[in-house]
Length: 464
Ligand code: HEM
Image 1 (cartoon, rainbow, N blue to C red):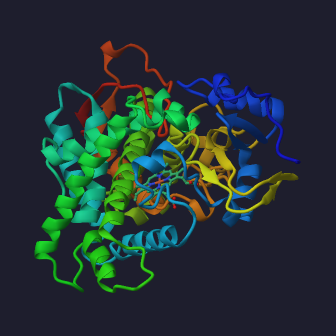
Image 2 (cartoon, rainbow, N blue to C red):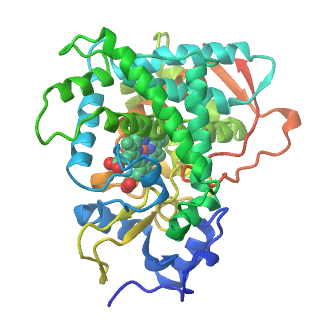
């Protein structure tokens, strides 16, 4: 009763056949135009409420934040990740403790000698070296950027970085790629829509196998670190977690099994997202060389002879900040965020939404919402600049979502994007190869969106 309106659905399949499995974003937009910013659908027999636009999404995630802070618990992703970790677990004690722990630990590593900034700069030296080796050739940046952002999270978790050819690094990267691909594909929709098929030996089983295999790698890494660990003197995230486990509180949700999924959550959520944003930024910077040059002029002016850029330098670089934010807006890395679920009967924009309803927040609809942006449908740093050329962040900038479930790695991601882009733009000029045809800006749809694969030419800048 008083449930949000939606299109008529068929028995068994619900509205699945009305959504393109390759990319449902246009379908969601079409349905928004017919049914408004809060509408309902059936995925199989499961009712789902889709939220669009900044008003509806903020009312749900911020004003009624707790009501909407759950996660559905009977999906493919929950079964693969064994209902552990932080991303896909439901609102409750274990989620709260693990979320708080990650935020505190990330903050603690942000201070002192081993600060996150130092770790990012350390990793960047290797990225710079790889790009220097590629001067004169055209190169494919996808692998390099993914491995850079993976190593930054790995530094934080295990104080370890891997050579780009390293077997362990490549095992992680393949795991992330393969399981994301399965999670984006039709077999995952079939798994979620038709529970009776779940035990059949269908292609979705491969994701479980991949998870088992990569879990063994994490378990191996943790036991290595245990050998050299001094309790109470943490060197990294794993040590902090083990210290927490030592406290042996009766009601503690910390365990080594939890840690395995937790670590994989952070490695997965923290690498693909950052590297896809960087790929989008470089795609546009190469396509609009005047924007690239203007960033470089600002960077040169602000940094002068300074050895390396600090995160605090962003306050003096409004244009570069605007370009980075615009890249994030256009990259739209998490187009449908991560599905939420109501934890109690609640209301939204006059509709009643019962406990346990799956919620899809369509972040795409906010990041290009008309009325919220000066240029919603094109790449323009002006979207983040006021009349005086100062950086401003519109309310609808929410690529990290909002509310109690807002991206846990937001501050780290912002720091990475700024330090990586400024360091690389200061040193190199990025050029779209003459033989590459016209750039294709159509994103590749997925739980995390990315660019079409592309090549780039890199030149050392002469003015430094
Ligand atoms: C440009 C980079 C990134 C973007 C655009 C992004 C975006 C998002 C979004 C949209 C969500 C879902 C929020 C919700 O459910 O409402 C999310 C959740 C999450 N992100 Fe990120 N993210 C990025 C980088 C990172 C990094 C670097 C980390 C790792 C430290 C990370 C870790 C997580 C985790 C653990 C969650 C789940 C939080 C929870 O359920 O409580 N993300 N992110």
